[in-house]
Amino acid sequence: MGLAQYAEKGLFAPQKIAEAFHTTSMEIARTAGLGKDAVQRKERIRSDKTQRRLREMIEIVNKVEPRFGSALMAFAWYRSEPLPGFSGFTAMQLVRDGRADEVLDYIDAVDAGVHA
Image (cartoon, rainbow, N blue to C red; front, side):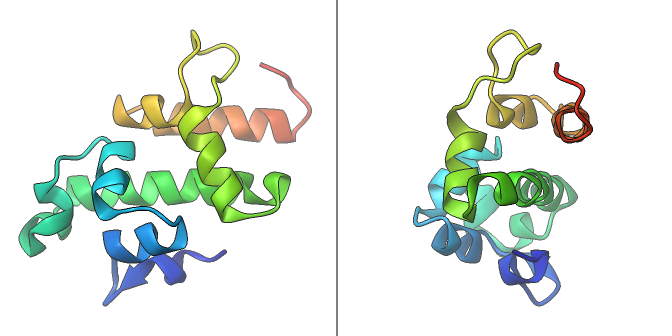
């Protein structure tokens, strides 16, 4: 799915993301490594950190969605599947630690046939 479906007025909208993944805004905050204020207070939703973390999460889920057949299954993978070569960390844990670029590089490597 496109990024636009998760946005509202030019910003990633936690509530729209939550609806797409059949969860709550609080769970979206947790999976992106954000506090509850980041998804509840308008000024925090607009912050660079909040928008960056939401974008990273959505980019990763979108990138693996074709392999799982749905955004919901891709989101489940993001949250629960340990990635080889990352000491058993999931994509979610790596994003929360500021390592989203490494997850995207890993996905690109797998897609290119290089197994980590």
